[in-house]
Image (cartoon, rainbow, N blue to C red; front, side, top):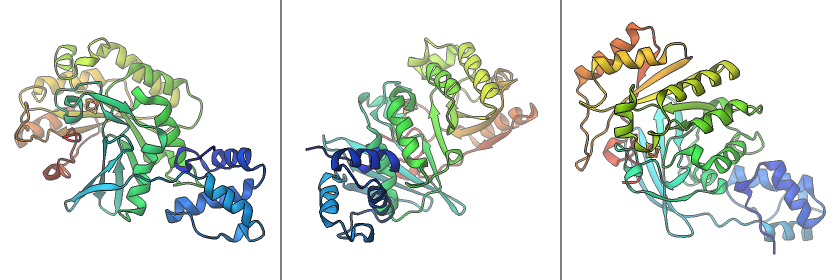
Length: 340
Ligand code: SF4
């Protein structure tokens, strides 16, 4: 028997599939989909099926709604981390971050990650598997219906390199952005890559409306970058620059460049100067993220003086810079801490 998971599809894709199974009822399927996304459950009855109880029963039996349970919730004032156990026993980590009146959901796209970035817990756990689009969207579903959180922004900055799982991530974006689904505008969804050049090129060629792009740079020179982001060794910064330049020019979009600041590794004034020179000619905003050290970390947090000096040097070059202050480091929910 064909089973359909609504979280895997946009509303119209879902209705098409339901129509293929039932042979009728596209409009009713749309109503069923919207009710499920809005209320988090399949109701016993729906007015649209008043005259078609058998059709409703058939559709209800076709829907696959085995939602993974939320197994752990940890909260601080500004961050809530939650874990869901997948059908094959892995844990997916997600974080809700509160900023002023807005809430952003940081989602995972993989279990583990192949990129092995030295400053990242997920990178240290190795790669287990990709998440399907429904497993990515389910993180949003849980945030809304289990944690009762109204989410305005979604960022792909959890476990995994999103471009390593390109198709599933893009399908999840389409579902999240669908006005008949969660309706998160594309300008409120950000895909963050550790610098996957092919992924950036694919986004540049894609003529459909796109979410925002963020690039985690790590370092301003290939020598430092290949030490802390070893899997990016084969993709020199020069080639990454060309890909980002083409993206900004073709799409007329800005890139958010993330830079995790590691004490005595990439936080010197010389690094700030090299970074500013590297970014010249690109339409970027720079997000400086002071590293969140844990007891087993191989790296240390930068000092406040180093952060201030680094940021000032970038601003001296007229770069728009902001510092992302720690949210959730005490519950291992800050940048680079998922997967711990
Ligand atoms: S920082 Fe991102 S790309 Fe690098 S290992 Fe961690 S999850 Fe993967």
